[in-house]
Amino acid sequence: MAEIHGKMVKFFSLNPEHDLGDEISKYLGIPISNCELKRFSDGEVSINITETVRNHDVFVLQTTSSPVNERYMELLIMIDALKRASANSINVIMPYYGYSRQDRKALPRQPISAKLVADLLEVAGASRVIAMDLHAAQIQGFFNIPIDNFESALVLVQYFKKKKLKDLVIVAPDHGGTTRARKFALCFNAPIAIIDKRRDAPNKAQVMFIIGEVSNKNVIILDDMVDTAGTISAACIALKNAGALSIHVACTHAILSGDAINKISIPEIDEFVCTNTVPLTKEKRIDKIKVLSIASTLGQGLLNIIDGKPVSDLFIYKPDDKSN
Image 1 (cartoon, rainbow, N blue to C red):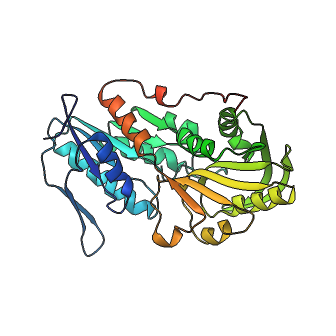
Image 2: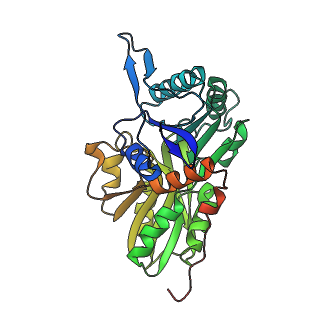
Image 3: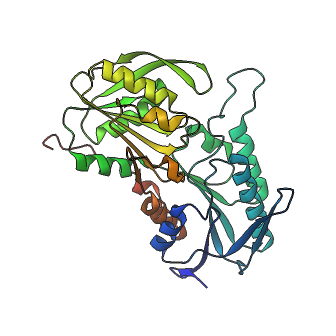
């Protein structure tokens, strides 16, 4: 029986190939609990929890990246199994929230899939959802249960502080990322710039022009996720043409689908920094990619939740000293 500060706790990871589960387990000081996840010949998911969870506070790690629909079904069935096994609470850890980009109706007859996912998680029996850098803040309002939106920015800040980049500019890849870029820039006492783009179709964007000064500057272009890398690669080419000295791409969720690896391999990008919210396959782990772990951020957040302490204290941005 695993205990944390006198409370019975179980931690499950549904992605055995995802190293994040092992790292969180070590941080919490408890083992990953056992469950058997199988599929019938027709593809149906079968889950068998091989140890008691009665009256335990249970945490389930499942990042809902590709294959998104499969991951969600595994998670929903796991939640149902835990509910029927009399778990005290079911806390879902979703470092990457699949369908988060479908958070509103852009056209008259489109679904709001991010809300549908929230409903499914609640109906299945989730007590709480813990996510990392939601694509849109309003997704938190889709839930009638507690949802914690953790931030990876401080992990990224610590990494770039060690690089001691001079003449730094933080770039938002679109107008929607301005707030994120401004908070990030505050930690370096750096100015920001904005890429003004037009999106002609999903996963396709055309860079228009750059708002701000990037000539003879070292640039960090910051985004919450990179999927096909079309926007990022086009933005980096524009930044280099505008005179940027070096270009570092930083993001939380490295989806990297389709031809993304080739797009970030362009010479205009000096470095691609991401976190391990999404597991990267071996063929995606090229030399240019640096993966940072958010295990300690999530782990400490889970401990705060177990102890009934606030998690907001973990994400306090401190302006950089001008002398640094």
